Length: 371
Image (cartoon, rainbow, N blue to C red; front, side, top):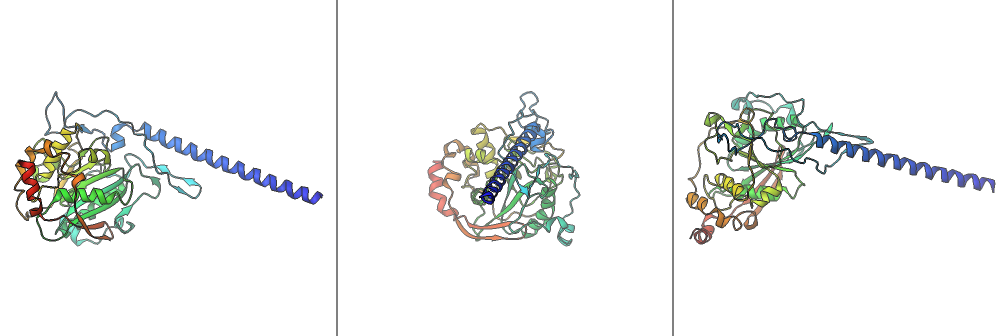
C-alpha cells in the first residue's frame, strides 16, 4: 500500500512539473511575440520600408517630380502578423529594417557578370529561387516577378547582381520568371498578372515586385520591400541620365502590396506589343485614388542592359490609354485568361511558362471597348 501511494505521488509530482514547464514556455513565447511587435511598431516609416527619405510623387508646393524632392509620406501602422520561426528552444530576433550588411553604391559590369563564376551568395539559394535569413526573421516575404522572353543573358546578369542584394537586405524572397510561350506578339501586362496569380499559390507574400529583366540595381540601400503604398523603385536609370523622363513613368521596378494590386485590377491584358501597360498603371493608381511613392534618386539608381526591341509598339496604345475609366473593372486580373504550359524549379528562380493567347482573339473585344 505504501509503495502504491509513493508511486502515485511521484506521478502527480511529474505531471505538475510538466504543466509548470509548459506554462513557462507559453509565457516565454508570448513575451517574445510582444517584444517583436513592439520592435516593429518602433520602426519609423523610412526604416520600415528601407527608405530614410522616401518621397511622394505629389507635392502641391514644389510640383517637381523630376528631382525626387517631394513630400514625405505619413508613418503607417507597421504592426503586422509575423511568422515567427524557432530553432529548437531558441527564438530568432526580427531582422534589421536597414541591415548592417548593406554596402551602398555598387559597381556593375555586364561582361564580367557573364564571364565570372557564380558568386558564393548564389550557392545556398534553394531550387525555385527561394531564400530566407538563417539568423533572424525577415520582416517581409517578397515575390519578385520578372516578365520574360528570349533574354537569357539579361536574366543571368540580373540574377548575378540581384540575389546578393536581396540577401544583404535580409528579406525572405522567391523569384518568379514568367515566360511567354510561343512566338506571338509579346504581352508584358498579361505576364505580370499571371506572375501575381501564380505566385500567390506558393506563399502568402507580403510584397510583390514587378521587375524588368534589363534593369540592374546600382545601390543596395534601395530596399526590396513594400511600403504602405505602391512604390516606383527605379526613378533614376542611366539611359535617361538618372532623371525621371515624365511624371507618369512607373515602369521598370514597381512594388505592390496585394490589396493595392487587386484594387487597381492589376495590369491591362490588352496591350500587345511594346509599351503602354506601364503608363496605364500610373492612371490606374490615380483613378483608384492610391498615392504612388518613389524611391529617392540617390538610391533608386539602375543600369539598363542595351538591347533591340523585338516587335512593334502596341497598335491601340493611345486609344487604350484614353478609355481607362471605361475599362478599369473590365480589363485586368478579373478577366485574365491563360494556359499554364510548364513550371520548373530552377536554381535561382521558378520559371513559369504560360500561353497568353493570340492578339487576334482580342480584336472584337478591343473594338467593343474602344467604340
